Length: 370
Image (cartoon, rainbow, N blue to C red; front, side, top):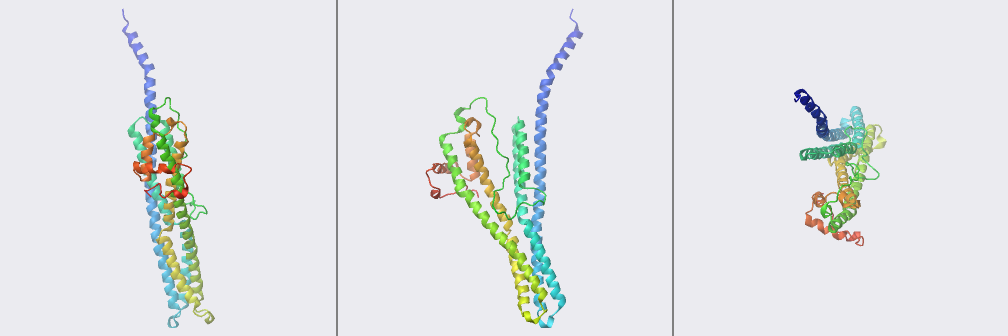
């Protein structure tokens, strides 16, 4: 006779021992998805914070520019009026000198922090965080993410944090002696070896390797060199303006303070005050109205953009096992899009792959996007 209680008990026991494998697998996948969603949420928050602060720092630039120019021109006007014999007034002299002194201090502060460059840093960070968020959402939508995806996403977040810090202090170097590209990506790591070899050499061929070698050579010889030279030029111009503005305002303050003090000085104090204040206004407008800091940051970011492409090409070409490289056709299309070229235009760069070709023979830039 069949004992029904024993059958039920045995079935429950079997189900008990079978359940952990399935539940554990699902639990691991749920935890992994939760990690990716948490990272995506943090990235979205960072993008919003950088966008808000970027707008705030752009407003700083406009407000400080107009305020400094208004104060400087007002002080120049007061100095000019106080020099008229009919309207000679000590309070006007002192007021003009105080305003010029205040302007000098404000210029020194603004030139140190470079609000337009700060705003550009935040705009770039916002763009990178939004790009990373879309990448994470795509990984989630494709399904079956791995622990490596979560680790790479975390590394990218931290890399952007280091490249574009949210706090105002400590400041990134505004007048570097050596111009370096902005680096917002983590160091590329070797991919895990695949268990079996793929067909068709993972999409790689000798022609594709020559295209990538040619693109790499042109990027280093032309594109990178171009933005390096432009960045160095802008730094020199910006540094000259940053020194000239406060210096001219300081001379104007000295001139304003000396107006009417002695007839031996003649018209020189007035000239120092009026001309110095006017030139200080022009200098300040060129520097911050022209947003020289932002222009330098744009060149630095473009420099970094092409440096990132170089590292990706070098990383893939340096991997001897084609199975461990990024899929060839996909990589080729990605490089063409990032360089702003069509696939047929990318083929023309293969002619520069040969070491025998001279750098002087390179007549074009690899990138057409910037």
